[in-house]
Image (cartoon, rainbow, N blue to C red):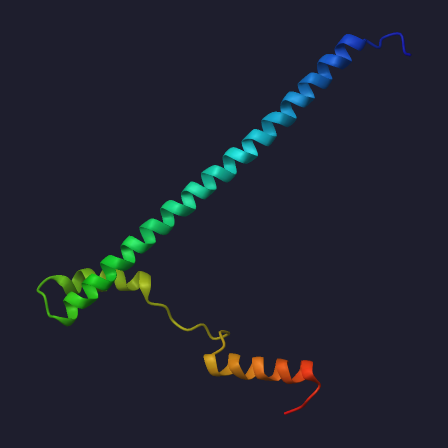
Length: 108
C-alpha cells in the first residue's frame, strides 16, 4: 500500500458516498411524489374547468345574459384546430384495414 494511504479516510469517503447515494434515492422518490401530486391536482383543475365550460355553454344556448363573454374567453382553451398532419377518422380506419390485410397476407 502507498505510504500516504489512510484506511480511515477511505472508510469515511465510502460512508459519505453511500450517504449521497441514499440522498439521491430519497430525492428521486420525493420528485416522483411531487410529480404525482401535481398531476392529480392539474387533472382536478382541468375537470373543474371543463364542468364550468359545459355549464357556460348551456347558459349561452339558453341566452343567459353575461354568459357569452365568459364562454368565449374559455372557448380559446377548449377548442382546437385540426392539425394538417393529423389523420381523419376515415383515414385511420383505412390505415387499420390495410394493416390487418397486410398482416393476413391479403391485398386490397
